[in-house]
Each structure stands twice: as structure tokens, then as C-alpha cells.
Image (cartoon, rainbow over all chains, first blue to last red; front, side):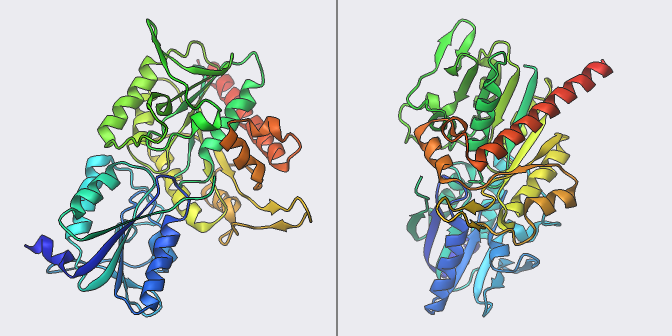
Length: 160
Length: 266
């Protein structure tokens, strides 16, 4: 019940995918969140790129830490009006240059936790930023989000 | 295999595959050298297209899998050759990817090779752990780490450098791609990806690793890759070609020196 509760207040979940690296997924996820916020929506970003989490720096909260509450982790509030809820492995690293050198199963466990154990509250949009590829992170994210309202995926590319 | 070089990044889309391909072409220009290019990016194998080998299939023989040869002295292996269609997604979890990488290393009949270049996917995960583990019995000369100048790339690349330290993989040096753009018409230089925190140069200074070189953006690079042609051959006069050639030479020198040191020790 607690699992459903954390995402129960989220109206739309959308994935930002590519396959290819370096095309601007994180940049787009950030700009999309800021634009939706500007339009008065309640927005959150879930950054499931465990090896290369870019969102915290893009929203200038790379030095923030996460806290726990009864329903799980409290997302970091970012953006000019501190109203964009953000969760990223970037906040769990002791040092920003620490490499997260994990194999699939450990990554899967954390992604599951990110999906079910973050107290998102009431959101109109939750944007899920993903790493390049079609592997553990993607399979686990889609599997973990299956019980919820997945709006769909935005695919990012460059021309070549 | 005499020398093994891993091409890594941490960040995606910085030009690892492009660089791996050009390193392979550059080394194979010496016809007395046998070069092997192994693409272990299982989800996004770019090497077949960049090397002009799309649609090629891998043949099995008694001695194992045959690499696909671009030149007599340049052989290539990639999961791309095992797909029935280039748009097939390989949606595998870590353990299955590791299994294939093991097979590539064990079952591909490379023959005698002077240089084995391994192109990797972005990140610090299964593929990277596996390749270092599986190659630990043989000898990896070192890693070439590719980045672009902006901080968003560097922050992932620092992690990769730490990964190398963690697994005791020597770092040959860092290559900064997309480092400036010179307009072919007005010759003005622009920083398309401004090095807001000092670029690879500052990072290398801070982390005491070698900066092998900076390669400017040249639209011809992307075109050559899309067409499966060697950029070095198609644009021999480009400043980017000059940079690449210098970097390739430094890598060669590093490998040769290493070899001499090893022989001394033995």
C-alpha cells in the first residue's frame, strides 16, 4: 500500500529516452520540467542515470543531500522557486567524482527504490530521465512503473 | 595480442566510437601491423556503420568466430554483426551482456594481433567491469578516455577516471573532442561546447592525467562516420585530422614504451 502511495499523487509520468548517449536527454528533461513549472504545473524529475547523473548540476543542486521521512525519501527541491522535486543518485554519493561501478542487479534494486520509496506528493508531471542504452535501468524502470499511469516516452536524437 | 587499448568515457556521445575507429584506421595504415577493433557496446553498437561494415555477417569456423575484415590487417567484431536487422534492440540485462563479451574475447579468432582496440559503451557498469576482469589475465596497456569540453561531460569523465584507478587500469590519457569549431567560410573560431570549468586541460591538471590532445569539431567527421569512411582518408588536410594523427602517435609511443619497460622487467 505504501508503494502505491508514493506515486499515487502523480498524474502523468513520462520517460525521456534515446538509446544514443549525449543527444540531450537530461538537458531536455530539465528544460521540460522548467517549462511545465513556468506553466504552473507541479513537476518532479526522477534521474535514473546511475552512472552519469546530470540533473542535479543542471538545476544547481549538486551539493544537496536527501533526507528520509516516514514514507521514504524526501526529494530535493530545485529550480528558482524550489518547486521542482528531484531524485537522483547524485545526491547519495559521498563525493561527486565517485564512480558508481555497479552491475545490473544492484542498479535494479536502487531503481525500484527510487520508484517506490520517494515521497513525491502531489505532482502533475513526473519526468523520468534515463541513461543511454536499452538495458538494466530501462527494463527496471518500465517494470517498476507498470502499475502506474505511464503517459508515454519522448525520444531524443541528433541528426546524424 | 601485443597491445590492448580500451576506449572509455563515462559520458555518452563524446566520440568514443569515432575515436576507436580512427585509431584503428590510423594504426592499420602501417601494413606490417595487425589491428583488431572490438565493439562491446551491446545496446548501441556504432562500429559496423562507422567502419562501413553494416550488413556484414560473422562466420563460424573450427577455430571460432571470424572477425569481419575492413582491410587485410584490420579486423572488426561487434554485436552489430549478430543482429538480423540494424534496428533490432538488444534489450539485455547485465549477466547476458557479460556472457557475450566473454564469448567475444574467447571465441573470436583474431590470430596474431599487434593492437586490440576495445570500444565501450558510456558508463561504469557491467560491460566495463567485465572487460577489465576478462582481460586481466592478459595485459591491458591502458585506457584512452574521451570527453568534450563542457562540465556536464567532465563530471561523468572524472567518475570514469576514478573507475580506472579503482580497477587499477592505467590511463594513457584523455582526448578532448568537439574542442572548438573553425568556420570554413570566415575562419572564425567558436566554442560550441564552452569549457566553462576549464575543459579537459584543467581536469587533467587537477587529476594528474595526460591530455593527449584536443580535436576540433569538423562536420566532415560526422559525415564520414555516417558513410562508413575513414575521416582521416577523406579529409587529410583538416585540423581535426592533424589532431587525431598526433594523438594516435602518442598512443603508439606509449604502447611501445610500455612494451620495452615490460621486457626490461622480464
